[in-house]
Amino acid sequence: MRTHFDKLIGKSAQMQHLYSMIEKVSRADSTVLITGESGTGKELVAQAIHKNSIRAENPFIPLNCGAIPKDLLESELFGHEKGAFTGAINTRKGRFELADKGSILLDEIGELHPSLQVKLLRVLQEREFERVGGTRTVKVDIRVLAATNKDLGEAAGKGTFREDLFYRLNVIPIHIAPLRQRKDDIPLLIEHFMKTFIVKMSAMRPGQTALKILPEALTLMLNYQWPGNVRELETLIERFVILDETGTITPDDLPPRFFDNKQRVDSAAVSLAQLPHDGIDLQTHLDDIESSFIAQAMEISGGVKSKAAALLGLNRTTFLEKLKKKGLDTKLNEPPTQ
Image (tube, rainbow, N blue to C red):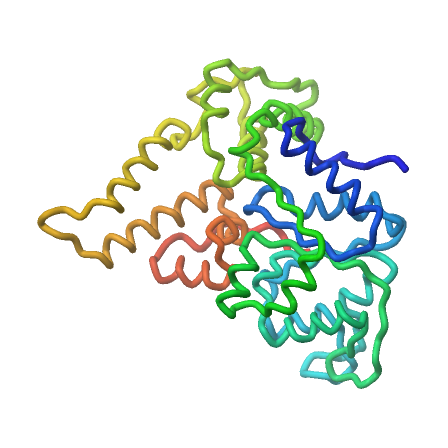
């Protein structure tokens, strides 16, 4: 069987280990827990596991548990019967049924409400459930893949995530290293994203070729810490391709954060560690820090609030509340709803 890693790019030792893990777990049918910071490519890893498994010809159904309100998430997962609630005008299959004979990815599993954690535990144990408003037991043949940017072991220890569910999910753990720990992959990723976006732009800008990145610009990119990981790099390359006028990327084309990142981190560390002799207004200081991180997250995510929330480890609703409370811009465009 040919191994499919077409969307996973990298030659670093960390990526070689990841490829090896994908090959091994694809041969089995066990539950996999994929961990890593936001933007590292957890869904791509889940897709690779599915494509290389015996379920490859059957559905791969992803669901972001943090992007759907609790009251709607139960129906999304398990489906509902006609008349189960206001607006349920037809019987509807949930994601588990749609994934029958295939794989389901439960992304941001750490955001799952405790009441739904109990129901998910039953699905993992018995591979059966009832639709919302229904009494008939539905049995499914699925492989469950879960992903999170949180430490579920720590959450289980604190009682914010069911310990028994954590152990059911954590049969085979796979961790994805952040981009700052595998910088050998950056040139390959740049080349990949460059080709991808040039192809996408070909109708509007025929004949556009790969951009040349000056060594000093590449050095700045290699020294950068990439808090938004591969997703941040992808967004940056897209910007380069769209705004290109000279065919060359110079240091002047990089955002300010590439120049002052180290100083900003050092300054933040000092300001957090040292209390001025004349004291501070702690709440104001913390609010300023929070506002700064929110602004940086919005910049890194290109104004997409769901992505910015993920960078800060917040669910989207909490993030929107903070934007509103602080009077920050909440009118930036979101990607179209699927």
